Length: 173
Image 1 (cartoon, rainbow, N blue to C red):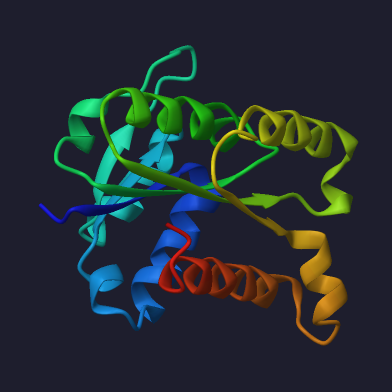
Image 2 (tube, one colour; image 1 turned 45 degrees about the horizontal axis):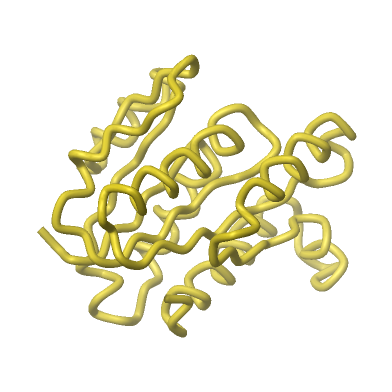
């Protein structure tokens, strides 16, 4: 097992990880262990078919199965905040990893677009507050569309994913 793990949580985190795997330049990022964790069982066949290791998350759970993290020295957690899975499990996974002895833990999270509604933004803001004692790189989707006005909605996600990759490869940990 690689000593570096990239843990993708929820749909946004899993999509981000898939792009990172495809575009990574650094050997250690390409060779990292990738774990795709989601509460949406319908998404799993897609990830399994592509050969990714998956982990089912139970929405009512307050714990994260840390046996998957044994031997990991650096853990990058990717998640979209504002929805159910990323907002809930990013914090649980990070704190479980730290208490289980993972030495370096960092999170890369996205914030929702304004059009997704104030409820998602409020949930994302609350989740972000709970992560304030951890190294967190925040990617604001709304700011992406302002910085790159000529990109379409779908391409905005790849720009966000590239920002996440840049944070990892430049040594967020």
